[in-house]
Length: 216
Image (tube, rainbow, N blue to C red; front, side):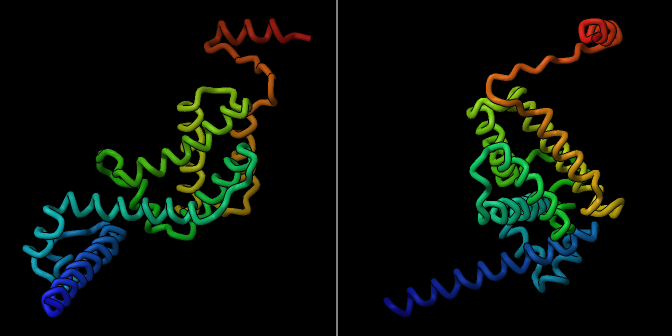
């Protein structure tokens, strides 16, 4: 009985090792933008049936690689404690997001800069929900000036835009524009308790009305 249990555990460990080897090889090839089953087999030292046995098909394998990248990203943020104040926690999260993208550019490109239209993976949705909960905490404290979902999208757009440009080498993290955009976004989305922010009407007619109403 003990020998049978040991054999099962050995096979399970071998299976896990094989899966991990395939995933790591696939990630390397995806980061280079030229994943094919033939190249993957050569790099991982396996046969096509082994890949199909573990992952079903190429699309499922790619989704798993991307999902793992999101999981690692989310775990990196979860390991560090944000400030207690919800507004400062959002500022902190913006900085951690940018830092992760710069520290792991290959992961970041796989997560966010794909050319296909696949829906978000489970870990990707969980990561976005972490951001939404941080924004919702600001709303619960009475400091959010916009709807939670709209504010969450705005935060992601800003953080993603900055990170993508930094990863692309267009400018560096110490550029004052990074903090300017981050702080400007948070100032726009948050208010002091009880403060009501006047909103600028849309369109040219609305612009004239706003100017008249706010003329000194």
